[in-house]
Length: 141
Image (cartoon, rainbow, N blue to C red; front, side, top):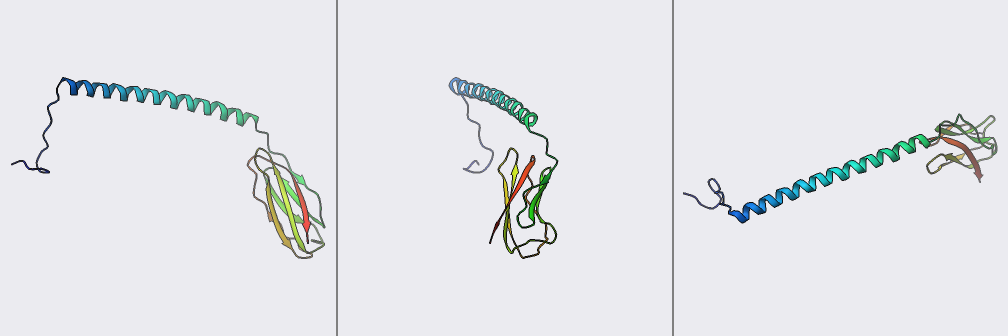
């Protein structure tokens, strides 16, 4: 008893035309696979060359230093890290101190903090990936 949806499905007998279509399909898929593999390999090789060039061109991280002082507050950078600081006796005026780290090979990083008069807090800026080459600070009241 063989009803629809039950039992073992029957295999259709394929004639010469069906066999030829199956062979064409198989050859097409093999050709597509080899083309895809070749394109993937060439793309990967190109990416490795470009990536290697970018690494060799990238500068070494800088040693560090202090940026401009505004009412005793300034930016200090070390290689890829940077901070906003105020030296003793602290911020001379209450207000917003904004600092910009100049990053190499990427957009610059910004931060601003409101400081009360006399503030000596240190705020850590978002690190640069390659290097920081300087920090500039502004004051807004």
